[in-house]
Every structure is written in structure tokens, then in C-alpha cells.
Length: 487
Image (cartoon, rainbow, N blue to C red; front, side):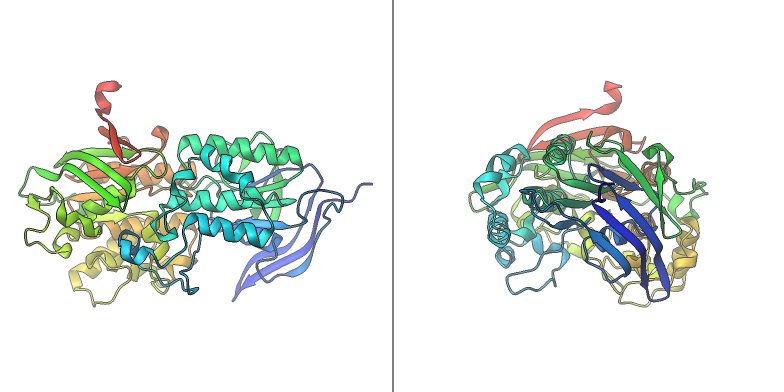
């Protein structure tokens, strides 16, 4: 009888009083390629890290590497989120820092990061150059790590792991932040690795998978449960939409007809053009989707609107009827905008409870530092009830399942009932049902006078209220269209 590739027996992982994996046993036979899916918070990431030896666990995990294979006898884990450090090994970054070019020099360039990885793993850089071009990642090699968007950070993780070709590759949420073409290329690359002998364990609820995937499982009560297909994955309970709190039904007061007006805006870092002659007008009450491939300039464009980009003062930019730099403060702008983005989620205060997270939306802080007023406390409580978060009010945000974290951040985004909502890939990492619920809430909010800018790659995952589209490519506007006219 052939020896299995992986044998796990009696694996248990416990954090404080919470048992995440409970006496789990699992066997991976040679040639099996696994997808692990199911509900948020069931321990999928913990299992991936335990398999790679990255978390403390009791029990027995044995990987029988093929000593005759040319592939490295390693288990390599690609995390959902990329944690990078500055040149001194520090991770203490702040949200707006990626747009401050003079501070961007504090981190390695993409190429330097890849060259360091190549030296560490004894890899030949020439082997990856064509892959970088194919993956749409060659042009960012001179960018600092802190300048990358969430999708570009994901690509960096994937490039390193797939370049290494370990005998066991564990990928946690591989499609997070990737545009459509990049997902296709990634799946093709994963299939090629499987052909070469790499064993895959993919953690995802996505249905657009590599053809090589031939086994499916989910975690239930801390144990592995093999299934016939991803269609059998357990899903979150269907949430019943409730009536919006009264304060969110009030149409926000905005004295001007135009929320955003950009005229021939350009952003550059040295010789690198990030935005090129971008013009765009968003009128009050309009519902826009902003689209474009990874690295097209979407995050930079939003940073101009949010007031986070230092170059905005020298441009022809009008926000809420005022020209940038004409006397209004950044806090005057932020008071009128509710924003959620992957980067904000990354940098959010790790010590913030759910209650503090929502409260911080009143003060546009990445955390919470001020005592809230009685009326504000009432609004926080109404939103926690609306999103079924009341029982988690004193729990640290980062300890919740991802779906609940995003709902708490959406609550933070809308707590002050702002006239403009900027939702930058708000459903990254959520399954289809969670995404549908999130977008249903957005649709309901949109009925009460909100202006919306929503970033999303897939038409099937957008709120129904979206009316217009702007598309960027390599920093230029290549399309502005009315979606309703094209239906």
C-alpha cells in the first residue's frame, strides 16, 4: 500500500479557551489536489498554517516528501494578507503612508524583495521574468512594497510561492484582490505546477478553480469533512434584511450638485506615471463602479477623493463644491465620506473592539480615542443590532470571522450617514452569500440619497443600484459609460 503524502493524526489547536481544531485527522494521498472551503471562522486558515508548521499544535503531522523529486521538499504557505516590514524590520505603518513618496523609500522595491527571495531559496531570477510579464507584474518591479495595492501585494505573494514550486503549496484565499485576467493566469499556472508534482491545498469558497483540484473538504466542529463538490460547502445563515435605522433614512445634506470633479489630473512618482490626465465628474446621488486591472491606478484615484494623497493640492480637483487647497481641511472632507478598503482593514487598530471600530467612524480614525455622545452611542447600538453584532461588541475586531469584520467596518463607514460612500473591494474574501447580503445593504442605503463609488471586478458581485462605470487602464480613463443604457 503506497505511503500517503500527508498524514495528520489527532491535530488540536487552541487559542486561549477557544479550541479551533479538535483532534483532527486527515490524509492526503499522492496526486490529490484539495480545496478547503466552508464557513468563515471554522479554522481553515489555522489548518493551513498548522500544515506548514507555522502555528503551535498538538498531535502528529507527517509529510512524506519525495526524495527523488527535483521539487523542494518543503511545505509553503501563502497567507491571505501579506505582512511586509520596512528596511529596519518594523511593521508600524500608517494608512496614508503608501501615498507619501518620501516615506515609500523606507521599504524594499518589488524587485529587491524578489531578488532577496531568490537568494534565500537558491532560485534563478531569469526563470520568473516571463511569468512577471504574463501576470501583469513586470512594471511594478521598481515600486516600493508600501506603494502596492492589495491586488499587487497578493500577486507578490503568489509569485514567490509559485516560483518556489514546493512539493506542498498551501494558498489561503488565492483570488483576493485579483482582476479577472489575473485569476485565469493564476489557475493556469497552478495547473502547470500540479502537473509537475506540486500538491495543492487551496483555501477558498471561489468556484472558478484550477482544473487540477480533485478533492473537496470543509471544517466542522474542528474536524475535516470530505465532500463531493464545492456545492456541498456549508454556508452562512441567510441573513434577513431588517429595516434601516431611522438616521440612515435621512438624506444627507449636500449644498452642491457635484460631489467630485477632476480635470486633467495626473499623478507621478519620478518618471512613473500613476494617473494620466484623468477627468471625472460625480454628481450627487449617482452610483458608480470603478474598475480596471490590478495596478491601473484605482487606489490612487480614490486617495485623491478621500484627501489622503499629498499631490492632490496641486491638481484641479473639486470636492463637495470646493477646490482642493482653497482652505478646507482634510477633516472637512473626510467628515462627508464613508470609506472601506482592504488597506484600511490591514492597518486598522488591532486593539479595537467591534464597538470601538464602529465608534471610530464618527472621528475618521483608524481606532477610537474620544468619548462618544449619547446620540452617537444610540446610533452605534442600532447599527450593531442591524448587523447582528451586538453579542460581539466587546470582542476585538481582528478575532472575528472575516464576514463579521467586514460588516463591522461597513457599520463604521455609514455611522455618520455621509453623503458619499467609497467602497473599495468591500467583499474581498467573502463567499457569494455574504457578498449578496453586503450588497443588499448597500442597495438599501442607496435609496436614501447616498452617492456611491464602488470598486469591484465582477459584474455579478456588484450592488443592483450601480448606474455608471469608469474604467482605468495603466493610469488612463479608457471608458466612462452609463450601465443602464447598455442593459
